[in-house]
Length: 504
Image (cartoon, rainbow, N blue to C red; front, side, top):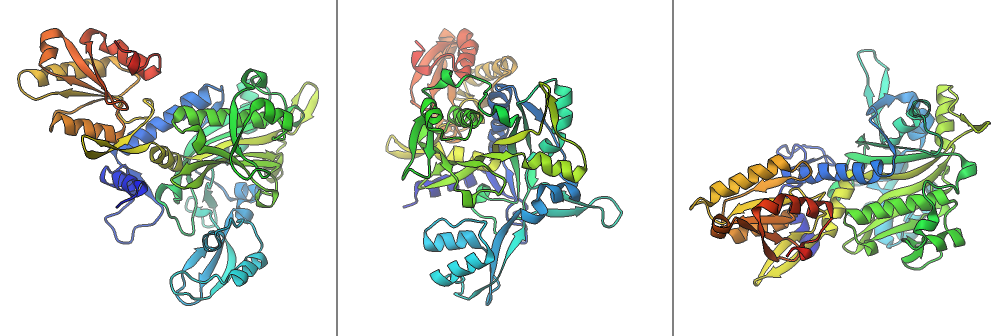
């Protein structure tokens, strides 16, 4: 019998939520994906939800930067020297492996990705690690750079690189935005855009691809004021953050007051970042128990990082990294200051400040898409029939409401079309769908599966009494409401100002 995860992946494929690029060609590249009509609606809604509920609600600035940047940018940032993964090649079949992952899978223990070549060789020898395909010996252990190079224009040697992460534009633009935004530190800048990583062995679909979108946010602050936050932490002192700390054997909740008291973070700004990111994920539709911030040990952090927490989401029976909260200190601005020969420090309150950077989040949109849908995919038995349900937030679902005539005849189709067009005209916030093909039960099932929140059924009573049946996806309950009030009711349901259970 197929597992829930297998059924979820089958659902994504049969509904064309996402699929490989150029899939009709046998030699298409791995790690590139396209979104179908339903998947793309969800993708766009995710971006809009992040923009409205995270960026704008917290008064962050937002930019849009170039995908291709000069070589000197990535020399300064360290990408051309350090943005790499360990690999090894099978001596017999020439299969190339991402070494830290291969050893982790074989030994069932977590292996850091920044060990030395000698340390990897020792792990291979001690654990008798060989090629999983032909049992051949692993050789040529080295580090493989993930950056993709391009020659810009017609002049040979005019080298640029496709960005491997979207934050470099934020660092490069910081001083200009500081001067023109008329804001003082801390300044937080966000960006949504495409990035490229020449992954060694892209796998697990959207979880590890070569071309993907990022939802990036970086905070620039005075290190002497790391304990000064945009909101008072006392007002959210009871809010619980879910951690997997190095000292704890399992996940554990700590409220904001305890985090401050125990000094779990190196400053209140980091605690604030933990709060707003977890709240964003919970508001989006992840359950509290399926989110954790894993404290990253010093030997697995970037050399410039003072403290890092990986935000991980539980997927089936494993934890998957979604992004990290990373205290990057002054590394980025100093590196670009040296590379560009421009002073990127600022003056405030009579002193010169070299801003520090807190990476609040760098979310891979494909990962967010996959993990949100997988976390909210349910299989239920309805009338002895197994059915798929996608329990999505109204602001993320591909359609908020569907208009369904019970049948095409007797004027029901015409009345349904009238209601559909009226709602399409009036509703500027949510999307409306129309379907009159197939039995009403099958139409309900199709809409439940893609996450549509409500269905309005137009039947003969609609024509007699000017009422419609509104059906709730999650409870499967139905209620009759007057047509004249349906517009305002739907808007209240969409904005969370009322609940279906309160409809009389």
